[in-house]
Image (cartoon, rainbow, N blue to C red):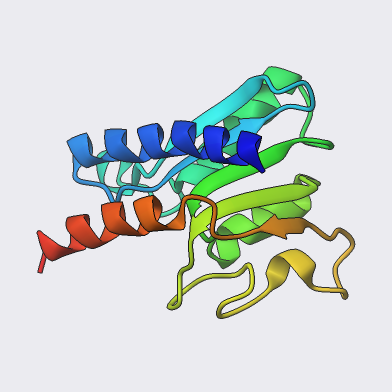
Length: 150
């Protein structure tokens, strides 16, 4: 679990970079089986005018390019906020076996709060979920952002 906390620090760094473009501060990293960073991402919906430019999607795309494979077997996705249904679907489709996230998303989360796409038994791939890693830091970053936008 200590390595998950360290990896979450990398995701938090990505999340903070999203603030520069006015995007919601969510960050993600894909870690390979040997601990190598294969992909990073931060929300870029505002910057790219792309509704699919979520941190997880960008990190997954980069990792797939680096591995030259859409199968991200034995990788770990680390993200500051519980993935939404789109991102959870991408995790399942890319065969990522493990997701580590910080803050819960009680409005749109798909890793146990609103939906549980990652552990849906009717799908062809199931994911181990480790929730609440550095949760307070991840949640505080989001609360601060939204407090300034309301």
